[in-house]
Amino acid sequence: MQDIKELSLKELAEVFKSWGEPAFHAKQVFAWIYAKGAADFQQMSNLPLELRNRLKENFHIAGINLITTLTSKDSTKKFLFQLKDNNFVEAVSIPAAGRVTVCLSTQVGCKFACSFCASGSLGFRRNLSCGEIVEELLQLKNTLKESRITHVVFMGIGEPMDNYEFVLKAARIINSKYAFGIGARRITISTSGVIPGIQRLAEENLQIELSISLHAATDKIRSGLMPINKKYPLKDILIACKEYIKKTGRQITFEYILIDKINSGLQNAQELSTILKGIRPSKVNLIPANPIEELKIRPPGKTETLLFKDYLLKNGINATLRKPRGEDIEAACGQLRLRHENK
Image (cartoon, helix red, strand yellow):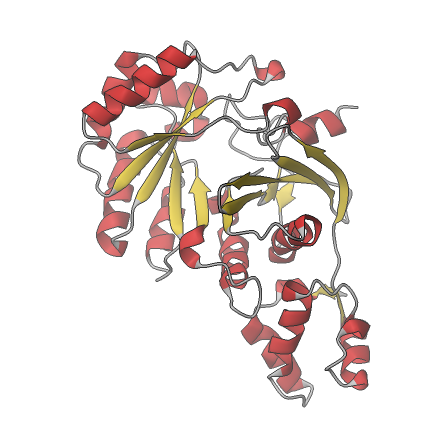
C-alpha cells in the first residue's frame, strides 16, 4: 500500500482521473492532510464515501512514529522519529522572534562522515522517501500546533543533494499553497558541496535558498573535516557557486562551524575572506560548534568567535553569528539518534 504523501498534487489528480473522479478532489485531499492534519481518509467529509473507501484501500497517510521529544531551556525542540523499517531520524524546531524554523532529515545516516557531525557515526542506511520527509514536517506541525512553522531547512541527518529527487519533490509539496504553503524563499537546501546537485538546483527555476557547508577555507583543513572535499575541492565548489549565482541571481549562504583549535583563528578568517571576495551576493553564517563528547568537538571562546566575525566584516564579507541553540538537549545533527541506537 502506497504512502499518499509520495504523490504531488498533479500526480494525485492523475490518479483520480484514472478512477473516473474529478481532479479537484486532489486539492481537497491535500488540504485535509497538510492543512488540517487528517490521519484517516474517513475524516475527509467533503469527499464521497465511495472515494474515501477507495483511498483507504490503496493508500495510507501515517508512516512514521514520534518516539521522543526533548525541549531545551531556549525552547528549541528535538524530535526522534521511528520509521516503518525501525530506523530512526531526527528533526528540530527552533523558535525565534516572529518565526519558527524547522530542520528536517533527508537520509537515514550519512555517507560523508564529516568529522564534526554525529549523523554519519552509524553509517549510511538509506534515503528517506518524499513521503517520509514530508511527514517529518507534518508531525512537527501537528505537535507544535499554535507555533506556526515559517521556515524549513533540509539540514538534518543526511546530505540532501545525495537524495536530490525526493528532496526536491518534498520541497515542492511544502511550497504548494494546497499543502503547507511555505514560500520558496523560506525553504533552504543545504549541501556539503555536491556539485552536480548545485548545478541541477540552478536549473529548477525555484526561489529556494541554497546553503553550502563550508567550514574551512583551505583544502587541507576542509578535507580533514569533510572527506567529500577530496572529490569536490574548494576551487570547484566556489566555481559552481559563482555559476549558480550568475544563473539564478540568488544569494548563497556559506555555513561555517567554528571549532576550537581547528578553523577558528584569525588566519582562518583571513583565508576565508580571501576565497569569498568575489562571490556576490553571499553571506557567511558563523556557528559555534555544539559540543559533541564522542567526537571531541568544542566551540572556541567568545572573544575568538567575535574576533573572527569582526575580521570578516572589516574585509567586506557579510557575516552573521548564529546563537548556539539546544546545547542542553544535544541538538546537533544525529546526537539523539546516536544516543538512542547505542542504548
